Image (cartoon, rainbow, N blue to C red; front, side, top):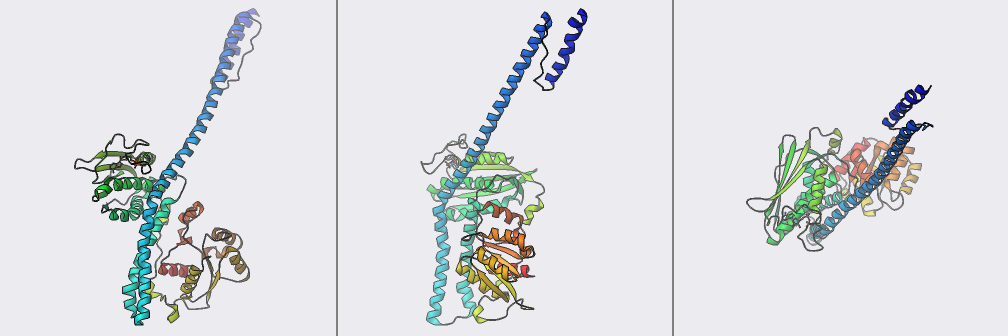
Length: 466
Ligand code: ADP
């Protein structure tokens, strides 16, 4: 009995308790019993289990604290990114407004010129109107359209989302935004051959990254009033290397240029975050940044990014081009009558929901080209009332309107009139709402963007009716 109690039982009690501890159950304890020697062993064992349990609790608590800190850090980082973006936008706003004024001045100028010319000298030949007035006017309007579109794309705030992005497209957005600013300072922005590849990135961050580098080169070359920023790309063993080479004075301190808050620009102009964010974004995309002063002078920055081998089909969806009907096959001048395409069968009814009267009337005039009966409404409520009483063949809706938005109308149609969901088109100039951006990426066929091309507008509506 003594042998059993003193020699056999203690290890029999200790072994399973140790095993429980080993598998992570730190609650395991052994009974201490009355017996001297084993009691001490058991007490030591229990103390050890207790301190292990405390250490684990401490670690868990620390872990939770770290998680919280990480979340705060992420939030702060996203704020920082947004504030750097806002500051870049702020710096660009005046320039963009100025750039916008030029095409607008041309549009007004040509319009007034035509007005005066008609008043003073009577009718002109259609060819003359087109060549001398309409063509340059439309060209200038197109320039304004591209500018606004690029600016809005850049200003969008979005969650970080890494996906295959066509590199050329991102470069194109920045080029479109900045080439005029370069030209105005007597400088040149040249995008050389860049391979047509996709990189895994966040579209906004990729644009911001490129924009920061381009803006820095602009700032660096501005005082000298001449110089070129050349952007070129080369594909090499699964990566693409973008080189930004300018002809400015070069980095005064290349070692420190990427440090956060390092800036040589006057207060109010530089934040010192541009290149730090470039570094941060490129690392996030799995790439590397290298900067140096080129032997021949000027700053050179190289960004190497992994290439996505097979861009997802999803990416291609966005590129779906809708065939455009050349404008001249659809006479725009309604007053003169003329042939109306699609005039077989009964006249189709199209409901237009648009709060801006001029745009409502423009759409009416255009849609009458399709021999359609157009019902105009200015709010979602009015549209719902019409849909409750009449049959329509298609619905074209603005998004941002007083009262409910076009998105609400679309959801309502999906719920209550699903047969119309395939004959619905958003006609919108809004690209800032996240929900809208996501929807337009998933279903580009649902959208036509303002300002629209008349030919495209009509062909999209015709397709809808068919
Ligand atoms: P910021 O532009 O707000 O100063 P950045 O992080 O973008 O912040 O740039 C940090 C510094 O690096 C700049 O202040 C400038 O001194 C230097 N730098 C950046 N790009 C160039 C360039 N292309 N040429 C010369 N110096 C540059």
